[in-house]
Amino acid sequence: MGAPMAARLLQAGYRVTVWNRSAAKTAALVAAGARPSATPAEAVGAADLIITMLEAGPVVAEVIAAATAAIKPGALVIDMSSTRQDEALALHTTLAAHGIACLDAPVSGGVLGAQAGSLAIMVGGAVADFERALTVLQVLGRPTLVGGPGSGQVAKLCNQLIVGATLNVIAEALLLAQAAGADPVAVRQALRGGFAESRLLEVHGQRMLDRDFRAGGQVRSQAKDMDNILVAAANAGISLPLAALVQAGYRALPATLAGADQSAILLGLERANPGLRLGQRDDQLS
Image (cartoon, rainbow, N blue to C red; front, side, top):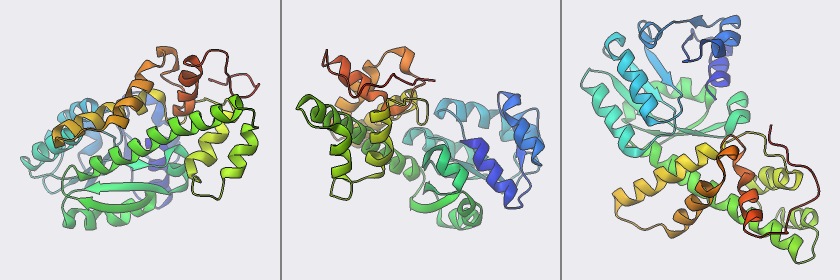
């Protein structure tokens, strides 16, 4: 996700310095005009605006800790990773103690959305900081300020709850269609345009029919997000029984599927229904 986002900023004329834990992953960006850096501290030293796009909250905290001393007061950090709300709040607090502003701004839309600059960007933080970052964020997609610090991560968790639950329902609907004697390809087509229509039915419903589980949004990421949703629910004092079922489904998938697309939840459903399999194609996992 970070690579196509950085590429769009370069294309828009911004001066971009890049750092990655795997240096080889920055090669294409450097060839496109980005300035390479050997450490997080080197990457942020001259920056007015710093964007992080990392695997999870603990990694964000580790990288920011390595960079904080080099970030100039008054700079703005935008964490676009998907983390827990409490991790986002801790990041805001840590940076504020050093005179550094922060926004939590996770995204939805996948690699294709990052490439097209059409990401949904959910932003938590101060209004003044959001307005300061708005022009840059608009290069990447459609930013919306959803509340104060930590609210961006809450919005992303709401997004992932809808995504995770809907993927399970699509898998069940298509497998039901086949088991009950209908053509699942035709059933999906019949549902298009009705109240059941969604981007998920369009894209991931077709993935399931094609048995194309090559990585987009990964099983491991969806499982992490479902964990974070239940943490947020516990912190808010509410029960989310459907979220717990979805989490259990993703956590029950074998480790060999951790890097598969999140639509591989279909494979877990098929394991729970021995003898049933959607379509006749071979599984595509890599």
